[in-house]
Length: 381
Image 1: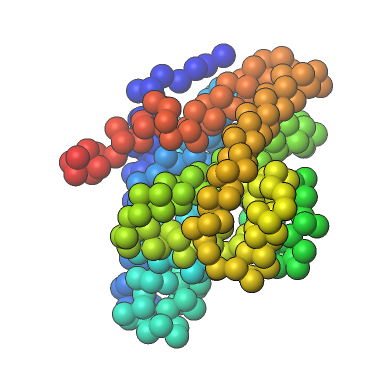
Image 2: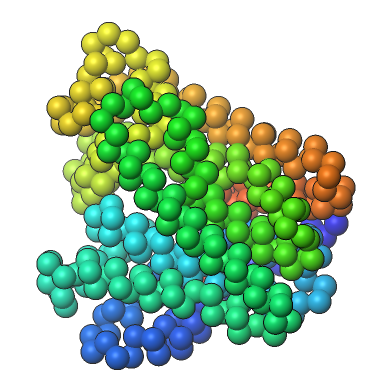
């Protein structure tokens, strides 16, 4: 089985960054040329060019090479598919920021915030929404422009577009979950089920496209997808936990900064979302503390500082960290023990699972490789 070196991973991401920059300067610029205000192009392009570990694109490239899908494909075509995945991800992040009302992403203004000077507060979100639509509409083009055989291009594009619809439906279901009147009626299983329809389809699409390039049939793709679901659910729980942990850290430090205020106003907890962290706290609190958390989720309490402390005292964060480990272990067991998949395929995907876990972990050396892939960041440092 092929195992990429760090040098190869860095080189793949450098090629991916170059492809995204070309896309922003050509396809995206052409699509936004009729818009008289250039800020729209720049606001959308920012979602493609900001520092990122490129989880979706890099997962595809890793799987494509370990599955030997690169045998008949030109390296530029593999990079193009990875770029399509990242472009679509940029679109959903742009839309997410509008829905969430976030003003910053990674320390930079979100699209609707950046467009406020040009469009005014009443229309900036609408302008940003259409900018996200431009990205989403253009996202499949890199796949369609590859030199891959036409039937294969069509299959990849179909898988790609089907996933786009799945994620939109999943995001809508998340909104419905958050407005459920009775927080106690939302179980951990309910939340994990919805997590399986949010970010999970996008990440699993990276694996599906690499498997399709390797010539695997629909049944194999389905089996791989089912095996990978707990992995992606674990990433979502990990993301929810990281958001809570960062909020708790900043509030404990009494940091009266724009970053703290922004996070305090836009965090999942501030929005009273039904996350696994909140559900775990409800399961572990009792008496007045439990009633206090329920009152907060119902909108009858606004003391975020106390709620953060209650969740910490409930030991919910430790439960969530253990749940992430368990979900990742489930994914590994599913792929390793599925004897209907060839042994070499299981070994290759198990390696990609491990790479994805390392890439998602901010403390791992693998997750820091993107700093070496971005010469512009090196110049800043």
